[in-house]
Amino acid sequence: MSNADLMQNLKLREATENDIPALDGIAAAMRATHEAGYFARSLREGRTVLLAEQAGAAVGYVQVNWKPNYVPFRRLNIPEIQDLNVVPAARQQGIGDAMVAACENLAREKGHEDMGISVGLYAGYGAAQRLYVRRGYVPDGAGISYDDMPVTAGEMRAVDDLLTLKLVKSLGQG
Image (cartoon, rainbow, N blue to C red; front, top):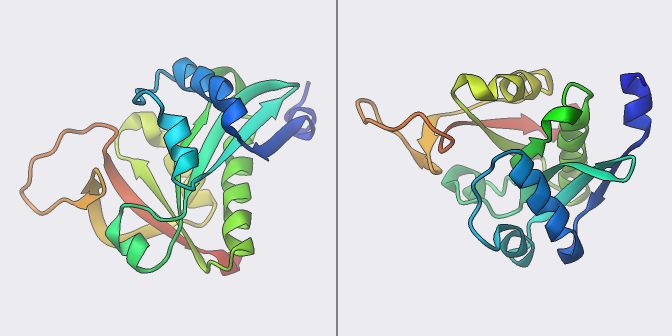
């Protein structure tokens, strides 16, 4: 089956509490280390969680945090795409791109002019780094962050999933 055929079978929808087992299953397949109750808390906090399904199987998820912890995004009312994951067997098919586009559309519908996203700095995030640049995201100019807090020159931080570069995109670019 071609990628075009696979994308035609892709369904993106807003997740509900009934989808938590499927979300947990994707997280487990990704070896993500979320605390117990992570997805229930995300939904309770008002984040939008999108679930990607292909041929009835859950293959990915992404969240839009409407009130991110990162101070510059919060101050400027920029929603942030967070925790984008596609199971390994479903990668290289455009699912991540489709999920980012859906998040951007949700933000536009709510009247936001910009969208934020963060990306890890080590090689495991290479595909995400390339995707976000292709979609028009650029660094926000504040440097790198660790757990949503700015890192200053000379400060030592672990190179792990919490060390990120924040990116922003004007939603007027489509």
